[in-house]
Length: 222
Image (cartoon, rainbow, N blue to C red; front, side, top):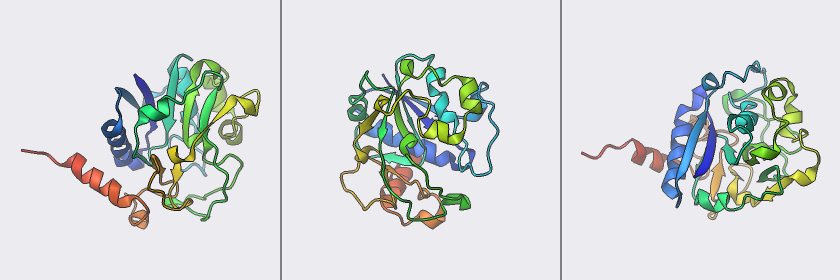
């Protein structure tokens, strides 16, 4: 069973559901999908910060403890859409790494993103937006640590012993829409600046695919 957690934000409910549907439709194996919703995680007590654009900015690092530091889990932001088979991504997990991710190396093109949030620049930006956790090797991510560590400590993986503990995944598994050029072979697209369900981003790359999937998902055949 492929274990997936999707960040859940009260202001982007539809994003969670369409991402989950895109995963289900393209997967060749059974998938367990869990919404990472703050109301379901009593151990997470961290206050929301002023520059925090989503509810799951820090709760994503609770995944290993929610799985009792056992097995593997995939976390992903909700503003994504799968175009490939998640079983292919799952097959890339490697026991020698604590976490695996797409190692982006870019400068943001825009200073502001959805809801007027500041699009901050920092090292390893968007690395944590899609991760494969080797939960047993992430024991430092206790609820107390996740609740008290700085944002950069968490998102820059400073809780790991060294950089060698971070495995690399091909960028097509977290293709940044609006930051990277259109890629017909992208397997998972990420509207990091704002999903097509926001009117300002309704014409972004791959938006037509998102709206088509949305229409088909809400359709009821009589």
